Length: 568
Image (cartoon, rainbow, N blue to C red):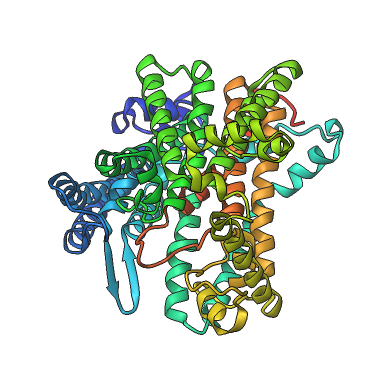
């Protein structure tokens, strides 16, 4: 390396060991050390402002969630949030990457503090503060963390378009091109904005737009802006999985000690996640994504060179997630987790014989999640009664009967959702372009779209697709489907053409997590955001996982290009 090249490298004294490793290669886009030193005063001033503003907002607007019995432990936890949040907001300005991971990891703390500040008909929650701080940090620190014009490197390596047989391989590069996905995201945001400002209640719709759409999308874009490598993306998966495990443990410690039986936990299942997420279904959605993330990282542990203590932590977190998942008694979360885990293990297997055995074992284990054998065993009443008795002991009578629309429990679970979906589709057909407006489903449902027998508890479509179509319109729904499809195709392309085994397993991991979200959001739904919850953590997690898919695809392309291998 000559003197000119050395002068373009950053001053190593300004970086930690991990950052020096990240900036080891002499890319031309690295800034000069003098420029770095000029950036620091501004960053320090902004960090001080972020600390003060965050602490002021959090300290004066934190409170224990409604419906939760406040104990000394909960009180102390909520009291510690303002200082911890302020520290991370300041860190987000100086070091966006570790702050990003810490913010994801400690999500249950922010949700338990229920921070909400209204100003001029706009609600500021903890998520809002972190998005702003991370966004500013990315802008201020872009000179300190930009490592390369990797796209240019990839373009210079050339590509072999002749080696792309098959429809999926031809479709993946076009659908996942950054420009196409970027345009889809911009178009979706534009449609959501237009729908908001033609809504019959702009203030309500604006809150859902900000916290349920813009902020989750911003978190995904921030991840992409930080240009994570393979190890970084594994850390994202770990942070998301352990975060869900922490939330699960909080709720277990809050509810299980006071319960006298499993039937009591089932009868009060809606109170299980009040401490952190406010809705047991939302906790189920988080856990359905967390389980495949943790399993995937464990499977890739040797390739990622994880040490024994990290692997032990992941096993404990996975056990906490499974315990919490069971105690949600959420059929949609159970189903999504089963499908995603089976998909992940099948993709991780190396032979078709192993995959066939996995599918067979998954089919047998599914009898504990979905009572489909009851349909077959009706011809043998003795076996049918024995199976029912065993299942009732495991999941309870109400959960077992809730799969059957002919039962009272089934009417309140399955048919409840069918009526909500049907009403949402009628709204979407009558308002196809921009929908009825975010958070306006309940208004229109009560105004003539309700399906008999009318249930006043229905406030959203209980399935993400009719919900999006009803409240934002069919075009927005199609764009969301396009983004999910692009993410899955990008991961499939990485899985089929990985630079190494760890990247292949991470592609399978994020693919399984996205599939899990699609299944649980289709079966359970998402109301996108409600101001009484002061959080939309499930949507942030989903957006980060989808962004991680595109980040992994970018990393894979760059890794292949640096090795001089053609893109296939």
